[in-house]
Image (cartoon, rainbow, N blue to C red; front, side, top):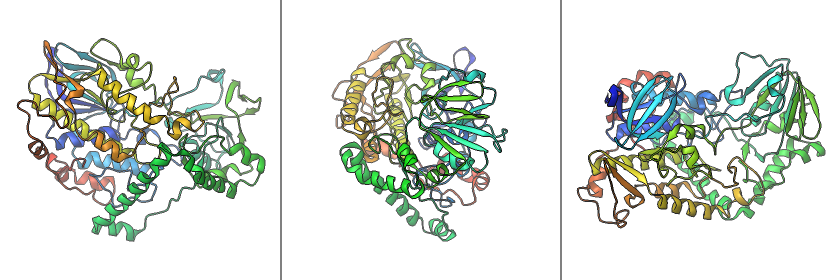
Length: 557
């Protein structure tokens, strides 16, 4: 759907959403629920799906149960497995795009090259690979797992064989009969290793730090279960609620009492001992840090794969490459035909930050050079009417990120309501004092968590050693913190002037003149019910006409 004509003949839209993964598609659904149809979703690839489109490596699956790793407003009674694989999750996202009528809003092959805040017009100027446009509000939903991180290894450019990252899998390259090196032991690697080990001639895993691995109790969801979830929706809701509740109860051990995690370590060691009989190999695979400090991984196939006679473990990081020979930091040399990097993503230094220029002419990357921080994980100081989904300190160590995304969508929706109620050409800029106060509170809570005290170095930490990634609380706490926008935390900007909002305005304070009362505000967005029809993405496409309208879309509760 197109917007209106803006300055210089460029298209203008009310909201521009960047990215079409869970965050971007969720934002699009919520915008329609709020009655906003003047928006676009800018996607750099040729299809939707985000990280679940990009990560198509063998064995790719989610480590969060399917019924919890899905939108509350788009329940799927037909998940095939308790922990569904990448194809099923990607099909679900395509299905959401079809069923909620989002396709007309989505601009594929439209990579954002630069976004600049126009302080005179109070709007964002956006340059994409497909053209230019302007927007009143930008919602950045690029996600932290979107840009692969490739290490700088001496000699890599001269390696004569095949090289690719796990998030950019080369499906045209046949691994059968090849000598393959897997670099890294993160969540992707422990799925790839057992998936390709039976095919390759020899597999060598380069391990810098061993992970803690718990069993993954995955199974097919029976036809009876799926029937019950379709016919009796409360059974599906009860299942989701149980999965959520168990994980909420676990949070205190991660955030307040890490010493309680000793029992979990014992279970993880028992999981290892069942498959790894060689004491020397078991010693190499046993972490020296507290479980939970790095992401706890789930697999029941990883250790059996490492016990295979054609799989080798090098308990050292890759130091350099000499021709086709890989040299580890401990001096081990291995000749290989292909290298697969499972070395993670740019999480604390997201590349999108280099492409966002704020009110003072500073990029977001420069503003965050000492560490990412954003008010309630959404608003960065100096970047008016710009919000991020899965922003700083919104990650989780034990539950579903979809819960956090939905909370941020609540905040986004109220942000847009506040702009509408203020009226006219207006913008909201997060006050630096509010951002700093929020960040200090988060970091103070972080000090006693396992992520900061567990004795490891993880991708949760930035270059300064600060944890700018994880939320140090429950998902319920975060939902309460993002239920509504407190205008006292923002500066109201109008064309040609700055209007300072009295400090008393905010939660529990008297409303601004002309603002709707809380009950009236709530009535703006009625709730609707929607079911993902059984039958996968094809069924969803056929239902798009009747179920895809704004009236049929239930928002995030």
